Amino acid sequence: MIGRICERCGDIVTGPHRCPTSHDVRRLVYDDPRWRQKTRPAVIARDGGRCMECGEPGNVVDHVIPIESLLELGRDPFDPWECQLLCARCSGRKDHAGTSVRAGTLRG
Image (cartoon, one colour):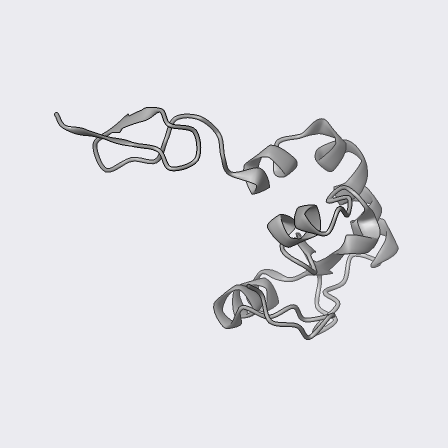
């Protein structure tokens, strides 16, 4: 099978799949114990278990500003104040629209 070279790290990638090296910063944040043990529970508690958009029960802890942008700005993706609690419906709407519910900014 013919391979291609990953633009980020130079590794050879075979097939239609992504590079096996983890470049997905979102995965690096969400798989980190700091996220699961501190940030996520702190946001749920702070927001009272309610979606910040519609007030229904929330279960999605969402970064107001995309993680990649936070890192470019030198901000901490584990800071609970960079996050908001959303319900699955509002989170899906935000992802589809590319906007932040609380910040009202376009994602880039």
